[in-house]
Amino acid sequence: MMLKKALVTGSAVGIGRAIALHLAGQGFDVAFHYKNSADAANQASQEAATYGIKSMALQADVTKPEQAQSLVETAAEKLGGLSVVVNNVGNYLEKLASQTSIKEWQEMIDSNLNATFYVTQTAIPHLKAAGWGRIVNFAFASAQHLIATDDQTAYRIAKTGIIIYTKSLAKELIKDNITANIIAPGVAENSVGLEETIPLLPNQRPARLKEICNAVDFFISPESEYITGQFLEVAGGWKL
Figure 1: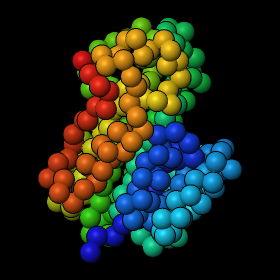
Figure 2: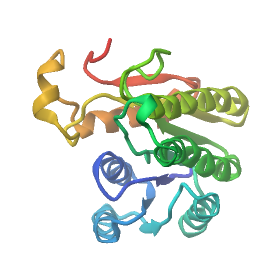
Figure 3: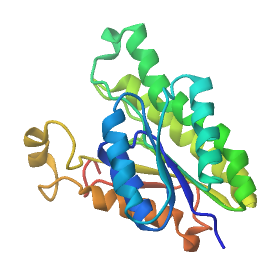
Figure 4: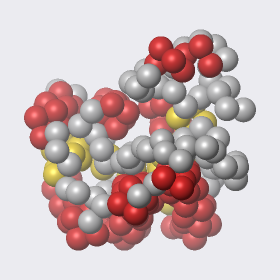
């Protein structure tokens, strides 16, 4: 029987919260992670517990290696193992490359690429111990295309790094019954500036959080054990 224990980073609010609650509804014991939003994370964890599963809220700044490692170890200890890791954390920046400060650059790399690396590297031994594992990392729609944009340079570089890292893990870990895949949302119902972006979308609506959760379902399914290193957009045709 598969061990159903999941950690979702950045799961106090938004997409991460929706995924963690969805996994709880699928019978997973879930660790909610937050950096600052303690009340929201605890509330989400309490809601998850109504599904009859074990849940908890754990605090960490995953841009710091030691805190990311502690988060994973604590989650695995309290949940009784770990089989699914969803790396949802990642700040966003719109700024011209020439005007991006060193601090902003570091924040983009740290919160997106480095945080994903720190969490996943610590989780891999636990996934191996579970006998199966699923790693789901987050990029954004069109991130697989090596093109420049006017105002997303640091963010795009960080997400491109996540894609390469995830594909490397996919090749290495398939023999351990562990897959690693990437979900790339476009504009979601919780995105900022919806009034401006909705007219740009092919079907004139953002992604529902449930639709992003469905993509997670696909990758973590036992039937998807041969699908790894893949990039799945949930963007309704945006940026194609």
